[in-house]
Image 1 (spheres, one colour):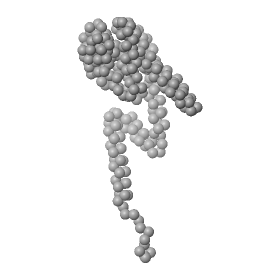
Image 2 (cartoon, one colour):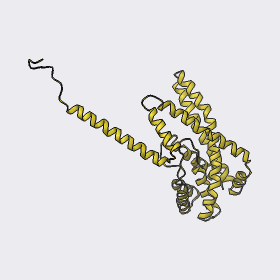
Image 3 (cartoon, helix red, strand yellow):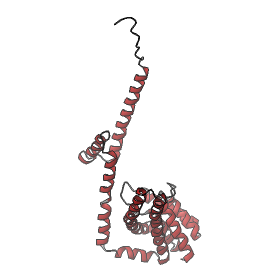
Length: 261
């Protein structure tokens, strides 16, 4: 693997992780897109399309819900396609290789999110002082952190090869992995606290406790809770709409008593 190819792949990794963070939701982080791009860089578009499509089927359900950090599809897709093209691996071997790489990318993502807390505090301080340029610097600082981290991950992975990456993942102490898991497990509590700041008022607090009741006490899953919430919202919308229609259709009260008391 030449260093120029490794640099281009690293840039692709940084751009892919920026998807939904800087560019909006352009689907640049999906294996279906990354695979062919890797194939173009390495001169084997056909294999890139095949591996990308196969990895998309596997990672289609890998979605970050709330504050959960799923296995990283960007580094896993890029490096698995790289190793499949360079080592002439078949689809099944490439898919199996993508999983440990995605796990390593997941740990890098948790680390980046943890360090990003510094930039959040910097943005808060800048906002208190009315420093708009300071806010921009803080926000770009977090984005650059993600870009550099995944650039280095993909760059080093492409240069070192699949054997070194797999061995590195296997040698990570279980205590470190457990520590990252505990740290990421604290993020949902922070997310709930932020959510309560928005919902905990007289108008919306009933819906908050209703959602907690049907999920925590009744054991309804997320899909069921969404259906119940949508039904309640529809009923409220229909009731409010009918009430406004009735009020508009009601004849206005007349002040003319017609000579009668």
